[in-house]
Length: 362
Image (spheres, rainbow, N blue to C red):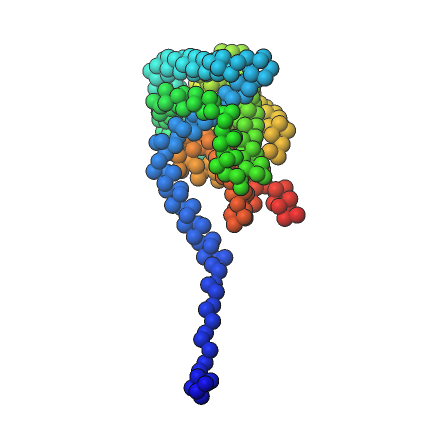
């Protein structure tokens, strides 16, 4: 062996590639979230009807299951009964709301004038008793907000839903028909996710949330209808439907619905009836929203209250009004999917409540 060969340095060993740093991983995750969010926003015209169909299907699957297992009806007959009730009920409510909207529309300008008169009367009475109020400036700021503008937003949102009515019902029917085979398909397609029960957890949590919230909203609407009937408030069914509908939106929806009912009561029946209606709304909100709802839902949601509030903003930005309506179910799905992955479980912990974070730490 020559001296040159003896003294030749050994070739450098190939170094293993460095693993991606935690900071870069977080940065790429944030960038991916932004891209996905923009994609959702761009496709909201397609996503919103599908979400509405999934919502109707999740509600309808429960009576479908009861008809099959309790009454022993064949699946095809139970499906026909559930779809018939769903389609008939939706058409009936839509027809009634349409007639009520046509009746209410011409009266909105008169209601607005009457509301301004009542507010001006109350401000002048407070000022006469020593309150330091700039009545003119307050009334000028109130004139920038009109009942007709608020009603237009509501009716446009309902019209957008009705425009996709038949598509929504068709997709709902197929989802209900596929409900029994869907868990098997999902377990086969995603074995790593389904083996620990994550898919079952998603379905159970979403279903329990929707069923409990629907029951509580029906109770809220019934209380509102009784109060309207006793006080003689017009459009009682339409106002009760708005209470039922808007209470699916956490916190903000209840405030909007109660404010609308109180405003109509004030305009139609005066301050005495409005104060009584305010008391009814506050008591119903405390009993149903603050006492019954936590006891019936318990810790099944597993979401931080701050996350619930922020989800309204985020999903409202991405999907409009419908996004606020589906904010909590969508956030629950996202949290459970994140919880089923090793590298993104930290995001699920941030979305969860204190009890969930404590159990994850242990």
